[in-house]
View 1 (tube, rainbow, N blue to C red):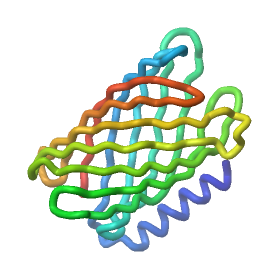
View 2 (view 1 turned 180 degrees about the vertical axis):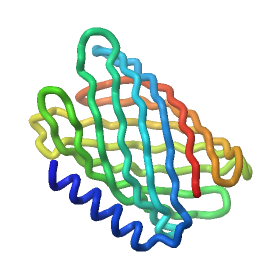
View 3 (view 1 turned 30 degrees about the vertical axis):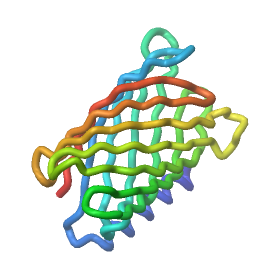
Length: 188
């Protein structure tokens, strides 16, 4: 845990050192997850980041999952990493998010890695649609937390710096769910 906190602090400090007071962003999200063979969950998330270059964002994200019913299996996550971006042309772009994270649960906390390649199509100046696949596994595989999440997202720019989105996620692996969510992202 101390190592993860140190990594997050170093990444944040180095990002701030590069900052020209432009290119920051934050986002909030909500997902309603319909668990397959488990307990349904509502997840609330927060993401902050810095656009370091036109091809690189540095992101720190956290979320809280509130399980319904009496399972008391609520959890928190904290993850950080770079998101590499490549603009193919005026309408198509790709990305690759690589991160390390920590999941905090009542019985045992553990670290994990994430790799999320994605592609986005800009429909017009306001609307975009994208898809990505999130691969995740715990560093200690005895936690049985290997999964793949397939994501489809639709975004609308309210202003050049404010975007709202909706997404559908289908997670398969050691735990499985289908979810629908909404997000709000602001750049400054």
